[in-house]
Image (cartoon, rainbow, N blue to C red; front, side, top):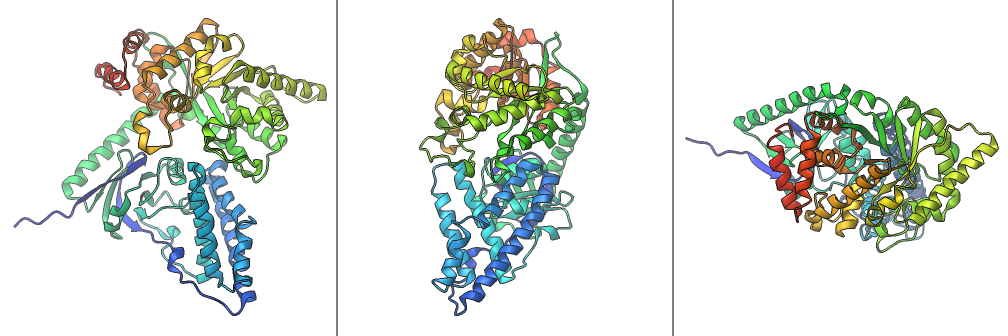
Length: 582
């Protein structure tokens, strides 16, 4: 008699690569709504309880921040620093005390009501980054509540066997506690590619599938579970044949990674001699350490905004100088392209008191903000110029739309340099200064810019959304977001041709640079420098070394005659069938 299969397949959003097989660890932390509302006859006693809980939270978060700095770097630790700041925010903690002292609510009720109100405000905001801050509010609220009620529950630090965590969501402080020796991956009810959960999963190198919705309720604690962080597939209670199939895929994945190790030391040169500089994108100076071993020949994008986001106030020139110097020294003479502050859009700095905007991606951000707040900009430029004495540093201005902005920014660079020389401060030789090409107007004017700038770096993430008028954060129209759109390809070609005609170089620091499918196109266009996540470097080098530029140039000629992204992809697919390494 045949038995009915208990195997169940679930599909969510794959956000961090890898196939993992382990036991499901169902994590259900205390929820605010589980605590019933109540009054108190001793408001002073309740206030004291809340104050003790706050002190315990601050102490715990401080320990977690130190751990995060060591394992994840300053950028990710900043997520937790933001939670401590909530505990001292006049719009968060004092209202709890007022609910206790004025209305005689219990400490638990005061926390629940305040957290729900503040989180609700964030959740109603149009900006996705701000909406995601609601998770931080609820996280710190849950921590307060845990100390108030003495709830222990299953703790992530107690996991001592190979497990896949299953949870409604994982807060930033949850994720920092994960021990990679035992935590193979995680599956969550909610979450998207821009959430902190996804960012931290990639940083930790943990496979993750998010947003599986109500399907999560069928996963039992201790049940066998397979997840594929690339495809978003989950298999609950897999049959033996399924286990064997995924085991084969895992073995192939591991063999591929080991095979790619050999490419770290190789130069990215095509079969017919076209050389490419392969660089890495970083957000902290710690990420620059060891990049050469991963195959990086440069830092093509140092995102300085993460330094600003990790501080509760504006970082001083000295603090910035130390960070930039560390990155320059870590690269030991290899190029480090430092992008000036790119804040606004989906990235906020509370201490800058930026205005709320209907269209923040089109608004007061990046170089527009810096040119308006010249003291802020000059301090950063001085710090970068000083760091240039310790390595091969270059400066890049983001969000340049026209020559006026470029000339103003370049003028402030020159002013900062004159100041330092007059003060007798140690600086290096004049450094290269270039711009990011993110806006179609700059791409169309590339021939004029090329007469004045030292280099271009194409930021495809924004260039695509501005060219096609598609919000890259909006899942409803994500199908339109495609850097293989013929208009985008033509703009990229225009930039590269202009730089070549004037003896300059062009790089690319958007996600397209690390996409193996895009490699033949970028070789054919003659892109000089490709900057990407360090994990993508070996794969890209492997592909480049097996291409011929002449064949790729012929491919580009054919692509420029096509009308749609679908046709472009089909043509590239046909080309790649002759090169099965992709």
